[in-house]
Image (cartoon, rainbow, N blue to C red):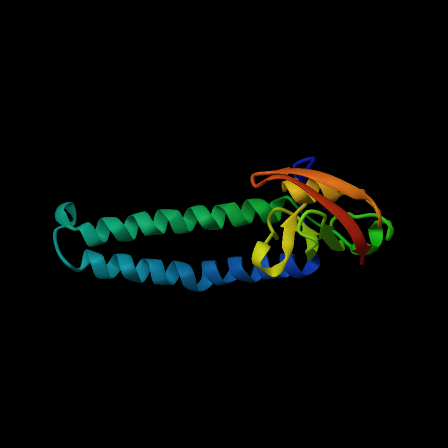
Length: 158
């Protein structure tokens, strides 16, 4: 979630990102340099596709490092205790029921950078996430999603 140009992260995710960046800078750059050196050893650089590919890979790798550094420079750690416990907010664990299918779903609302649908973490800026923000147990929400209009009831908030 970017608000006021900040990126809100949990302490755990901040530590993960910092470790990833450190690994990329320490070992990833060495691996890139080794690939380029190996490709360079194959002869004429003007006709060396392997060298060109290694240089392009290095550029993409450095871009990724730059993006991570940008996220970290704008990062603000959020704490669940800062928010009311009776409303859905970032870091809430929410149990909802799809009123059409009667299926119950558990989601944790997180920042865009932490979202992982397969592990039940949805972004607060996603259509479902936006509609759930600020709601309370028992409330019903309608969501305009790519799959059509969905309606949910909030069953619990942790």
